[in-house]
Image (tube, rainbow, N blue to C red):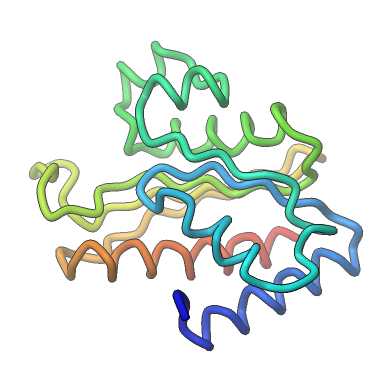
Length: 163
């Protein structure tokens, strides 16, 4: 089994909540590389809620697939609140979803700086009515897998709160 029973239970609950509200989910993932979409689709029956997932690991993919402006990427960097928000909005604009989540961060072990250390993750969730939330997480340099799984869990919680 790829995901823990705890994460699977959280995904099941999120899907049930969004199904009851007739919402559709899209994901825009950078540092998690599709793990959120993978977890949601691990749950049988998710196809009536999960609309699509974008894996936008590179800046070009963020721009091409989600419409994130190059100037935004250049000014703030991929790992930023501004880009996370733009990714979440872009996922809504480029899908039939009514709810989205976007994650961008530094999973390590390399790539961190003093300003943006390993374990820094920005998550944004957006709803079709214009509501957008953002949180920044500093998971620390606890290991690539641990950072990515902690990001998945936090993204589920943000989706649930916005649903």
